[in-house]
Image (cartoon, rainbow, N blue to C red):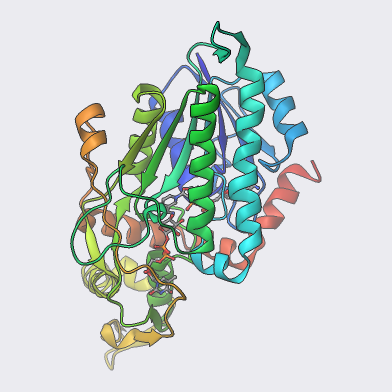
Length: 379
Ligand code: NAD
Ligand code: TDX
């Protein structure tokens, strides 16, 4: 049986990963460590935690005493580090928090793991490591900077981050690789493109657009909407991380990408058109619209769901123009490929949002913080 420390699993990708591994592996035990920042929602994983297979601990990845105690109690085989400040726009407003969490928090996890997993030294002075352990860092394609109209990021592309967020993630990657090179620590890193899917916090483009369309609000597109992102359905990302953690080679970096490049304007227009089509096809969904406009005959109008909702707003500072991943390495070594096409993934994502509007409202209203107090008091 393998024991995991999964950090940041009350957030978007971490919660999807937690559900994924609990579903596909029978013989694992997971401890979730999450600080429950504005982006962490305990309600998302309420059905998965507090049982013999999965335990939730509220805390900071930068807390050496706490992480040390967890290692001593649970003797982890794997650390999978999702915990981070993840929003580029927020990093422009408050860079320091990103450096604190993303760099120093990661280093703290590495250091506690190093102390717990090493026994002695070999004849050359390098530490000897407990067998079968692995520190996995969840990283991002943003570490590579920005592409022009052509080309792809490979694992060998030089690191050239631009935002405080991507600079902090790059620094964390470098610290992980420093532990590999200096101590021969068994580590792995995945660098992934933009994810979308269930439990995506509606400050990010796709869930924000869906939320605003359902409410009949304007859709803010930065600049002229020509920036390109490579969108990946979150479950495909979770599958890639699981493969790398369990079967990937020690010390390796793997790029994970959707082969799905779109401009932001294309994404917004496709989301509008898809919601319009779903509304046309399902009366049930029309009834779920927050903005209700009636036709003369009393039926619900959806004519207003069109591109006129788009509004071009001031561009993001230092806005990277294009990201695109070459995932050949993970395909060749581990057989991974993005299984969910964007056309299928966006319908799943919209339907999930329609069916989980209470979740969306709770995470944006801050009510979810009350959930923790209700569930756990001041533990
Ligand atoms: P998220 O913002 O939805 O979730 C982050 C989680 O980390 C939250 O639950 C939050 O409470 C927790 N957290 C924050 N600071 C913490 C701390 N100091 N200690 C413990 N927990 C803390 O993020 P996400 O979108 O799920 O991203 C997860 C990881 O994947 C991040 O490392 C991010 O850089 C990376 N990533 C994200 C994307 C994407 O498209 N969202 C793409 C590539 C890589
Ligand atoms: O309202 C918006 N309007 C808009 O045009 C928002 C929120 C975003 N955008 C643009 C900016 C980007 O070009 O859409 C694109 C996507 O923006 P985000 O959803 O904020 O994602 P991005 O900045 O690309 O970063 C995401 O992918 C890489 C994640 O948030 C990161 O954590 C991950 O590392």
